[in-house]
Image (cartoon, rainbow, N blue to C red; front, side, top):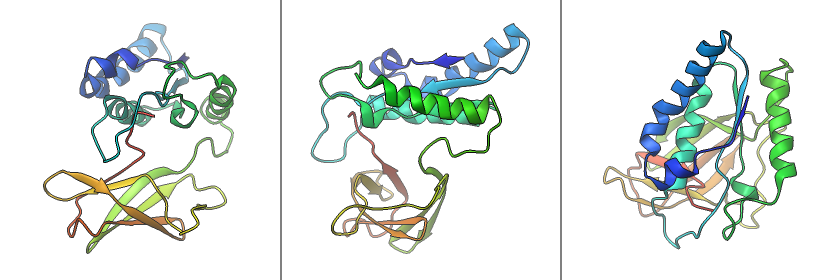
Amino acid sequence: MIWYQGESNAEDKRSAQYRTLFPALIRDWRKQWGYEFPFLFVQLAGWGPNMVEPAEYPWAELREAQSMALSVPATGMATAIDVGDEQDIHPRDKQTVAHRLVLAAARVAYGEIIIDSGPVFKSMELEGSRIRLKFANCGAGLLVKDRYGYARGFEVAGKDGRFVWAQARLDGNDAVVFSDRVSSPTAVRYDWSGA
């Protein structure tokens, strides 16, 4: 099964429901068909304008809900945020999405031992005013191409829950995330945007 949906759930601000509805749909269809068939899905593509400062985005919330469905056995996800178009809800680059689905199918449906996605969050450790993130699926290792050595797109929040831009530096295959504006971080997020 390949599933490519979620836009209306994001637009209707029902991302929280999607956290339970989507896994329930997968389990129900498997029950109805009588076996645990592979279920692959495409995460929402990038679309719409981004704010200058960190903000809340319904599409980002739904992407997070979609990724939570990976806890259901025999599932795989193809990301598409990087192939989206701020102006067009239907991304034109179908080849990249198809290639990512093929990789997910090779792992999930055919049992191949491959890395079928980019780095995936594994755990978070607080280290004073910094957060250390550990990842799975690092392949040959993480790489930052920024000329100043920072990974961009990270945000941190303190107890007030207000996210601010953060810097992230690689330490091996870990990312150490911090902001001078948050002395006691409690949360971190990455690429939380529309497009």
